[in-house]
Amino acid sequence: MQKNRQPLPLLSPDKVRAIINDISLLGGLDDVQLETVLAELRTLSYQKDDVIFEQDSQPTYIYIVLSGQVKTFSHYQDTKLEMLVLERGQCFGETSLIGIQPHSVTAVAQADCELLVLSPAALSSLFEKDKTLYGMLVLNIAREASRNLRDSREHFIEYAMTHQAKTC
Image (cartoon, rainbow, N blue to C red; front, side, top):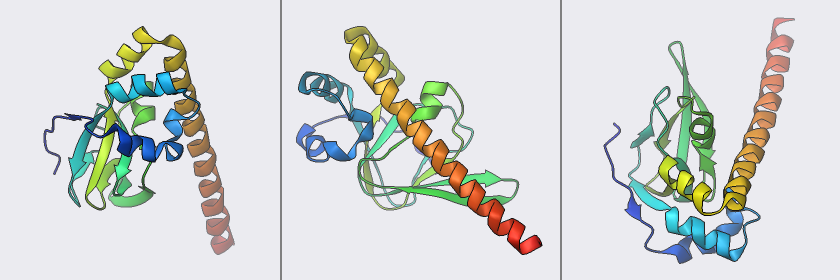
């Protein structure tokens, strides 16, 4: 069950710096821009099987896996479909937040995990501080959304081809 959690300040920016190359959201940022983003990031911790957010709930953060794993599920009719397993450095919730749309999946901690979070207020603060930085973040989110869309298309085609082969 999802609990009401308050994010905590990022106490160990070096933990983020150690995995910076794994975080596509922060790609292409210079050192000053990176420090600006690190100042806005907060952390949330979840235990195995904790619900991070539910499908159709309103987005509250952009999430980045700092440690552990997160599994996402989509509920369609009465079927629960496993979508992705997210690991260190991977981002989720970003398209819902940027698109101002409810979450399309449920996210659950597959193992104990620590997540970095960026709130809408923090994103607005980054826009006010450095529009170039903000533009880079949004561009990185768009790139990830594009990659995810391409992956989804490939999975859909694979499914359709398999299903078509079985019905012919």
